[in-house]
Length: 349
Image 1: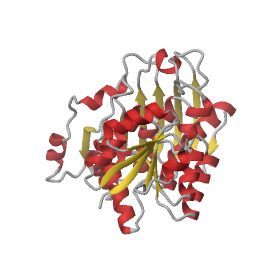
Image 2 (image 1 turned 60 degrees about the horizontal axis):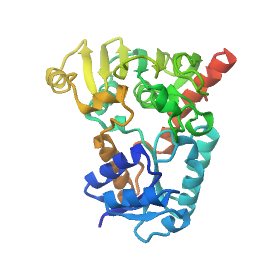
Image 3 (image 1 turned 30 degrees about the vertical axis):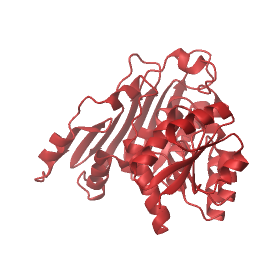
């Protein structure tokens, strides 16, 4: 019996979620909610589900087991609290919320009502990410020395100013390039390198005047294991370039570009290394367009994350990116903002 999912918020990413759910073979889109009945009806026609403009009625749908929240980032909390109270499991688009206090309220509500919570960081589920995590955990890089995250994308001024856009605002986006575009690579960086201990940062609104949040940011990091690192991000550099995460150790180094391997080198090679470099070499795909096109998101990563969520529900387990895991990137980003504001080093918990 397929698990019934309900989509909250009918924006660009909602269709990616719906296709990811259906592609698992174990989930179905049972319902959708939008404050606009017309938008809900259009989504329902496309995905064959029931449409609601009343959240109370949506939560009462008899087939609804999991609520997938795809609203603007700063509008996750209230929907999440009501869903948890109704006993519904939760999948929430990144970031799960735009302040740590709001993240913690969601995490606590899900714990209180004994429902599964996952935050969407689909990049962890790609084959390359899993290979890198395995190589680091097995010690192939030796002592970690440097870890860097680069998200240098392009978003036009229209992205921020078009009618109905919530981007570029503190209330609904919670930040700029780091919170929205850079959070995936920041999540990967801390997942690979371990916890961040200290942050020193600068941010600016350099190419998109008039927006409230940063369009460019740089930060220096100290990880808990002693390694150093950096974060760089911008949405104002034309034409936009591929996301990179670079990892360097005393016995090996890895560079990942998008979801491909640009460098995979170790002091002690294995028989599999050459095949890994060949199989995951940098190639052009539709996913590449995300650096300059916010609609260019494929659903394969979401499919894998939804499959992980379904397994956690079926086995009473914990998803790979539970609430506490999803919170980590938000904590780093908030530390960057605090450091830039105070011009001081910020220590994380």
